[in-house]
Image (tube, rainbow over all chains, first blue to last red; front, side, top):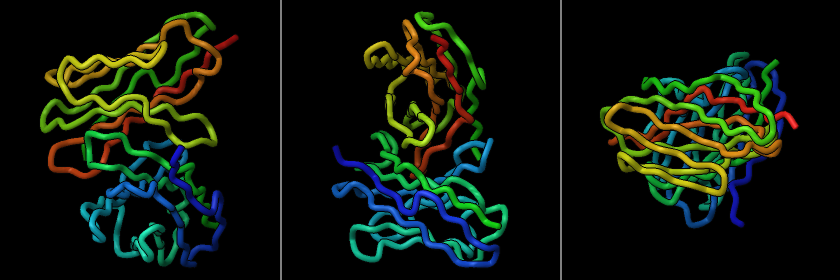
Length: 114
Length: 112
């Protein structure tokens, strides 16, 4: 069964360092998303991506964040200069259509900023 | 930021009991309501996507109902089993938005 895969599963980084979280969405899906969950809090939307551009982003997704689909299969989230408060579980998801079809989630990358 | 609330936050039931929990969401600009089942260390798994007021969906012992006019959805589990232990997330999709707004989840523990 097709699935969304994310790497790495856990990343520890020093404050101020750049990190890149990687995702391989399901191949025939057109919409891609990043969400995150800070421990004990809700899953929060970061950004959606369609047709090679950002279609929507939340207020969390500020200038230190960027997304890219560099080669037609990978979908990456870059955090330029990590802060302690960026520590969270980051989930990638993809869907065939927006909204009314299910989004398939990866297992997440746990980012720990020290 | 849209407010999606789930209750209760956590729930312990005995094996064989039936249970239900609630998701409330904005009743305006509704597009879809999603339910996910999330086991520790695994991906959230989609259970249902519901779009029409009055929708009822069923998958095995799990079912869900939707009331878009009053902004709530119920998830029911009949005859709970230990393998049903997980966090159940609901997520609201609004018109004009290309993302989901999640509730905090209901953490279900089924005691053998």
